[in-house]
Amino acid sequence: MRRTWTEISFADLPIREDLRLHQAYGAPQLDVPVRLNVNENPYPPSQGLVASIAEAIAEAGANANRYPDRDFTKLRTCLATYLTHDTGVYLDASQVWAGNGSNEVLQQILQVFGGPGRLALTFTPAYPMYDEYCRTTFTRLHSLPRTESFAIDLPQTIDAIQSLQPSVIFLTSPNNPTGTALPIEDIQAILDVAPGIVVVDEAYGEFRRDGVASAVTLLPCNPRLVVSRTMSKAFKFAGGRVGYCACAAPIIEAIKLVRLPYHLSVFTQAAACAALAARDEMLSQVATLKAERDATVSWLRQQGLQVADSDANFVMFGRFNDRHLIWNKLLRSGILVREIGPSGYLRVSIGTTAEMVAFRDALSTAMHTG
Ligand SMILES: *Cc1c(COP(=O)(O)O)cnc(C)c1O
Image 1 (tube, protein in one colour):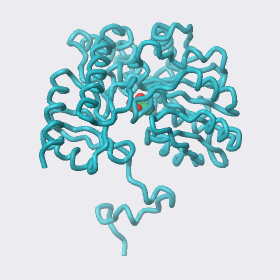
Image 2 (spheres, protein in one colour):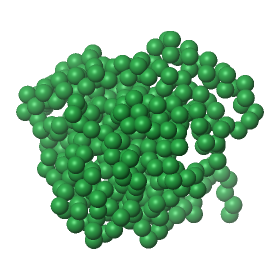
Image 3 (cartoon, rainbow, N blue to C red):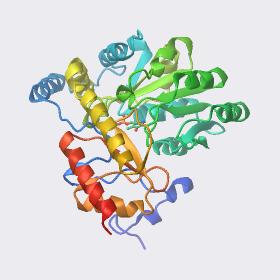
């Protein structure tokens, strides 16, 4: 008997066998007063900046009958200037690429350099999306565990690279969900033996502590290195959906083989350029957030909790016998954190000062009541 579109269910669909058993990825989006679960910057743009973004979008709208610049040269130039400012390394537009979030860029990298018969190497606990890109691109995934202190075990890693010959290696620094940054010497040692592409995911790069170098400084001497960044975290532009990477220009020529045509709209390009022009405002709360993070780490340790060192805008802490219970108690106090990481741990994003007061009060109560 033929059924209508309201009568068929998910299970009836001819879905790819390897996808059938999975669930769509995503943190709960709950409407609670204090949202500290997806590492956003808690400070909204100023009225002045909202107005300049609106003006840039209106101008772009005047040409919205035409497709956008497929190679978004203006945006790439703005991003290159920004990266040069942040890292001191000179880059031009040919060495920068962007997508709808760095998620899109990272998936493009696996589409070009991974694929059937190829292997990607990651380090757990890792950003869960790496698994998804591998699955989507039919790339085999191998994960090595991080050490007790969430560092990468360098001798073990070098052995694994030599025996597995991964096509792509994902190094996340600072790492999500742990917050730990990698020593630049370890990244170089991995580059020295890697046969393929090495991606250093620096989504939280702007929050690194003083003296922690960006892998962008390694780009000139390491032609197979890709450093990915995003406007979603420190740059407080998560809603704009712009992520990017820096690498040798030929790698970008390769990425163009898989990008969908015109993947960045005129509106995205215009809004991102307007935000990048207001760089100082966009980054003006980074120092406050770093100080709040360091205070949060100290406070959590004073409560007797185990806390990973953090170079990011979040902190992973535990261990709880029943982390879901604590997560739930916090939620009932109006505070949303993330249930992620090794068992017994939770992750809290750094919010405003008032939000962190609320978090500390609620966590104390949650830990000391039955
Ligand atoms: C948040 C995050 C990203 C990217 O997010 P986009 O919003 O897609 O740019 C990439 N890597 C890590 C480790 C992240 O935590």
